[in-house]
Length: 478
Ligand code: NAD
Image 1 (spheres, rainbow, N blue to C red):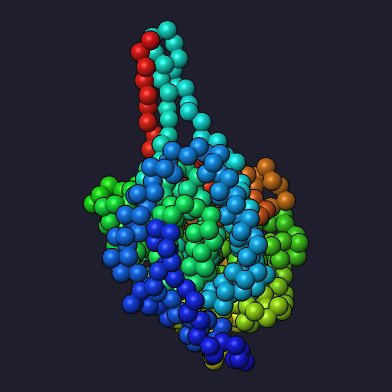
Image 2: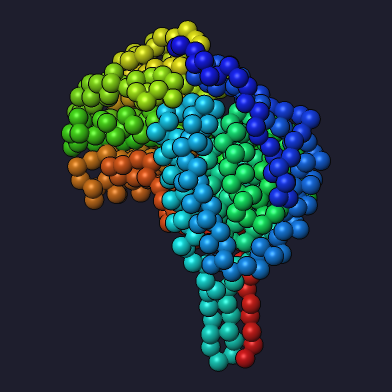
């Protein structure tokens, strides 16, 4: 991969946002462009003092923000979405440089995040009347919690910040937001837009390492944590939040199965299944991570998926011809490479890929694997990279048992010509979302979250919004 000349100058035009002021720090993070494998930017990293001041600012801003109406808060959030769209191209280019995904997908991430934000602020959280009889009137009200700490991962920094951010703000909370140390830059530039739109202290944005995440979860001035990341860190977050009994939403990893029935046309669905498996080079929590295909269509589906893999161009996300960018960071790259090596050692067959290219950049081609032992790491773990096993079944009950035989439960899909049967099968998947003839379709109006170890609580929809609020019963004797 040729190096890009413009990557040489180190970008340093980034600040933390605390109480309406853009601030520097004497600590910093170096940020690597994964397509080049080299540092291209440096940003400030927050200290404990920055966090204390951000929490203080968020607490100070809370009463006035809480007392605004939903409509007033919605109007500012819509202004934020508008500013995001205006800055979309500039932000998308930065997102591709730090995250690696193709530029068109960075644009789509921001555009979709803005659209989902607008969608969420159309949802009403009315006061609910539970009883209204001769003796009593009892109603259920929802009030904001206070300060929400939002911690995000590196695979989709903007969309995974926007969901919790808008949920928290719309419901009347103030925020301290921390992006991943691997991808802090787009979020910090977004902070400058947030600072134009919202009153000082309503949103505070701090970049920092994993230690900053831990400080946020234990901070007594924070009332709720919305965490998106790995299962292992999610468990630490929950344990840490217990000390102050913070409310917690956890959006964690997945090992999503797709069950492909014998009545499909493999060629007609291969493109969709390939995209749902390999988009963002497989670094998507709800990507298809295991394909269970009926023996009748197994060979034809393998052929059709191989044809899709051969068409996919791997490269720098800034090249408009690129379909699949690099793995986002060296830690994840090494993890995927070790899964590839384990898969080879166990004698599985690679229909595509198998060789690990030399750098620079953390590139891996799309790999489709068959004849693999169900107990292997590739089937059991969340690979979070461009390597997907295709497993054969002859009996639906057996396919469902294998699909559900995992500690994960984020989402899954069923592919069939009979949608009624598809819905029945989907309902037997032990997941937060089960799709039929589609995968990865989400919306502001539909709750999303994980079953089992894939998470706790739901994001989006009225259900998700209410998790940023405290239910309060008001009971009146007549
Ligand atoms: P990670 O758990 O390593 O890190 C996520 C965030 O947590 C980062 O900001 C990190 O700095 C912070 N952090 C690290 N240690 C912490 C601690 N002890 N306390 C508090 N915060 C801490 O996850 P990652 O590698 O950045 O992201 C990939 C994972 O995220 C995958 O498992 C993926 O499936 C999952 N994910 C889930 C969803 C979802 O909606 N369910 C969406 C995207 C990604």
